[in-house]
Image (cartoon, rainbow, N blue to C red):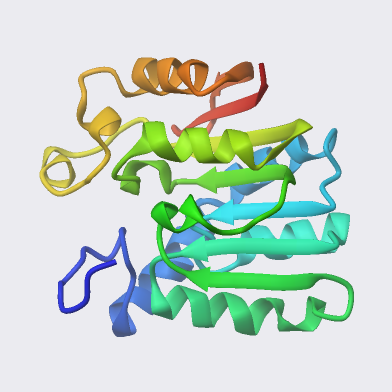
Amino acid sequence: MSDGLKFPQPMRPSGFGGRIFGYLMEWFAAPNYRWVMAQLEPAAPRYYLEIGFGTGRLAQLVANRFAPVLLCGVDPSELMCATAMRRLHRFEAQSKLHLRLGDDTLLANWPDRAFDAIVASHSFQFWSDPATTFSRLRARLTPTGRLILVVRRHISKDVMGWIPNPITKSADELGGLRSALSAAGFRIVRDEKLKTGSHGIVAVCA
């Protein structure tokens, strides 16, 4: 993560505008979160990792429903980390919380354990090296675990100018995403357009 740089609010919410953006994002993402929760049911995760947890709303739903032993997450926004910690603090008696400031590159050496479920909802476009991240996620997923992705289907030309993910920048994001998952050792078990206009993918270890 680079200090002193000004990042767009969707990538790294900050300040008063970021606070408003975070809760708008949470409100619009509610149907996606419900879809993710349905995909988590078969895994009933005891060890959960979320990449780009934002306000912590999805993690809160996971904590309420599954009471995982360990709930880990990484997010590049200081504001969102603080917001999520306040929201999830009440679950510390039932779940060990380990939320860290950073992006997907932090997974190079953390956390050092396997997970029943790894979720990334609307954060994939911000990964700078998706092939490497998928390999790291594959190494951190249990044999019966699930990787759940929610990606945006429509991105404006202006956003394309600054978004870092090379697969997103390609002419075929979903095709590139599927190929990257396969190359990293995943098998897709669910692949569908969501009612919100986003796209949901569930993958397991091949």
